[in-house]
Amino acid sequence: MTIDVATGISRILKQEGVGWVSTFPVCRVNNALGREGVPMLMMRDDRYAVAVADAFSRITAGSRIGVCTFQGGVNAAGMQYAYAGMAQAYEDGSPVLCITDGVPAGSSGNSQYDVASAMKTVSKWFGYLDKPERTPEFMRRAFTMLRSGRPGPVILAVPNATATYDETADPYCPVKGWKSAPDPADVRAAVDVLLAARDPLIYAGEGVIYAGASDDLKAFAELVNVPVITTLKAKGAFPENHPLFVGVRGDQVGHYLNKSDVILAVGSSLSPGRFSHAIPDAAKKTIIHCNVDELHINKMYPTAHAVIGDARLILQALRQEVSDRTSGAGRTAGNVAAEVRAARDEALARYRQVMNSGETPINPYRVYGDLMQVLDLRNSFVTHESGNTRDQLSTVFDTLIPRGFLGWGNVSTLGFSLAAAIAAKKAFPGRASVAVTGEAGLGYMLGNLEVLLREKLGITVVHISNGGFAGYGPGFWGAGHDPFTHQVMGPDEVDMSKVIGALGFHTERVSEPAEVIPALRRALDVNASGRPAYIEFICSQYPVYGGWVGRGEG
Ligand SMILES: Cc1ncc(C[n+]2csc(CCOP(=O)(O)OP(=O)(O)O)c2C)c(N)n1
Ligand SMILES: [Mg+2]
Image (cartoon, rainbow, N blue to C red; front, side, top):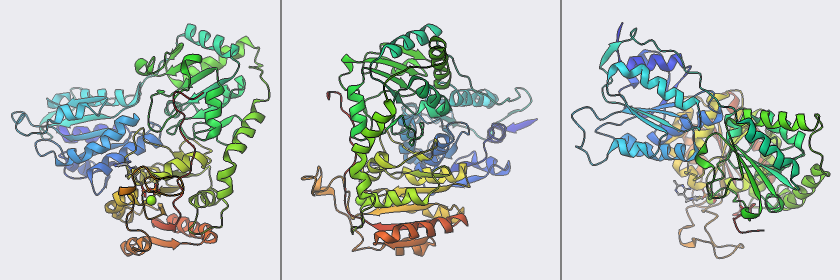
């Protein structure tokens, strides 16, 4: 049967289990998606079309691939605006499928912006579908790359969506994706080092979540009796109420990074970043680096032992090896759990104190502490924004299940939290979904709030309303690193709860600490009936949070 390329793509997406596609018009595949019954989540700009699909892939750990479409081709306005979304997905290694118009044959070189070279800088693979018959082949390749190896975005450009081909000539079969197991010799070498270590530390990255290896990480950490830190993006990969959990950031994390002699990194690139810990005095430590491929091995620090493969298969192999060598007893060490607990209690004391603060303006930690009380932490989703909400929440917010909290942003593009909260609602409709933002993130998301009303997405936006870009301004923490660009119109000048309330959201403006919990409860209640909520908490600027450890400390 002869079909056009757009119809072929739509049918293949259905075969691949794609339940909806986020978009901002126009893309020439969209009408076929509509005809074929693939629902479209129409965002209000192209960047958010990408970000929602990207976040869906993250939140489902790639088990359900997020797909988006946006305008490309000769008139690539949509693509140019979507670029920020793709750059974020690429930077963070998210397996999202982006479909766009390709520059038609005969039109290349006419516009200034070079689609192919731009797209190649933000994708694991950029496919240009140059012949209609190649539709199944390109889709197979796309899903192979989305479901195997190191995660990253795939971009498919379709120059002629109405060209036709014979659907029966190359019937499409869904791609399962493949994993690789580590070399047993590397596993043995890693275990030699680990069992001889004095103060080993597990450094867990987001690869653990993509591999579905959280339970394996827990079982392995318990067997070897080794404390665990997680990266920002892996927050939740290890249950944060576990006795071996050290933290994501905070003095206790620095303490353990400094004192460790062996670091077993799993599912983390160990890349030096603005929002990650370096390994202090790395030359004096032994690094075992378990990763899905070689890209990050011997990057920045010499890797003493690499173990290459899928994080779950690696953790299972390591566990088996340790178990065999110790007759199932595991590694005996002192009372590691008690030491971890003491280090956490000491480092977190000052945050726990302000989580109970009765001061006004409200201390932002009071909002976070109350949020933890109101939510069922095993059945909810919270994410942060760029700015202090990221730094504060990643220091204190207890995450008990993978993706109960989404940490994001090797570089953090303001506004992503709304996309993440939408994606979480789509992925787990029964879970409460909360985005915590400052005024800058809110500014980015305003145009997209209509989507929540139209789609009846019961999400709560928590605004830590502090009238400025808190990390930039002058205050009790010093002169501020950018005081000239710090202040915006704050709660005294504009009442955002009225602005957003006029749109149709349930809104409240809260200035009393005692009102935080009741207001959050009311918001979550209206969310349950599909109505979005915005709560403005009038807060102090309180840029206090755990730091990231640098290379030289020790
Ligand atoms: C797209 C983008 N541009 C610029 C930045 C730099 N940036 C990071 S946080 C921030 C301001 C945050 O202020 P606010 O939202 O009020 O949060 P607060 O720290 O006060 O809680 C800016 C401009 C960024 N992260 N993303
Ligand atoms: Mg602010």
